[in-house]
Length: 292
Image 1 (tube, rainbow, N blue to C red):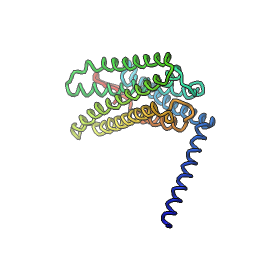
Image 2 (spheres, helix red, strand yellow; image 1 turned 180 degrees about the vertical axis):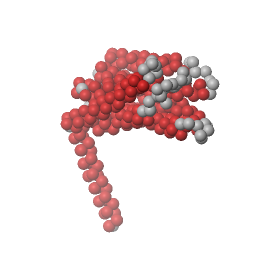
Image 3 (cartoon, one colour; image 1 turned 30 degrees about the horizontal axis):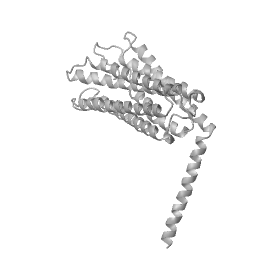
Image 4 (cartoon, one colour; image 1 turned 90 degrees about the horizontal axis):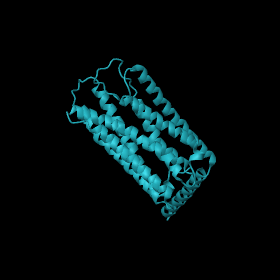
């Protein structure tokens, strides 16, 4: 009997604790102070990452001014643009987030995410070119494929935005979120295929190869980080498409927004920029490859 009473007591305390947690969560969702604190904090974090990308871009340009827009420079420029747009977005969060989403709101929220996709699939393209060249495989179609895929993604997204403009129901928003989930999954698969291929290829190099161990860790870490962030985005966006309680596109879920954007964009971008911080040498051969 004592054991039974204890178990009922434990259940009662657990129920009370869960109720208090739910009330605390709801009070945060409705608190303007929490919303302001979280979104301005996200604004500052994105601005810091954008500044780091810009500083790195300037340092590379000063180191190798004779080279044009290499893949490395474009990668850092796009990181600056993506994080800068997010910083502006969260800095003016009250004008961007509304209780009822409109087409303009979705464009402002989705465009940086699409640019984030283009930025990191550029890294996949770079690895694919290196892998194909190392294996003496044709690589002339990889760059057109990158532009074709990204062009198709933006074209479909614009069509979805147009559909949202004339649609009266929530179907268009659900389609937009599912599409975003699908392209995130495709990006994760791209990192698995070419990041994994690069990792395996580097492991087969002789142990005494110069920089082998460093490059191995670099490719492995970047692949793991990017693949994880795109998979998390894929799952969370897919869930939010069918469960409005998990929607990160509204202002009254500040804690959820904080966790989501930190995991899928801010932390991955900061880590990748740190891993790829090495500057190119001052004198380079004609076979110099950026983002090494």
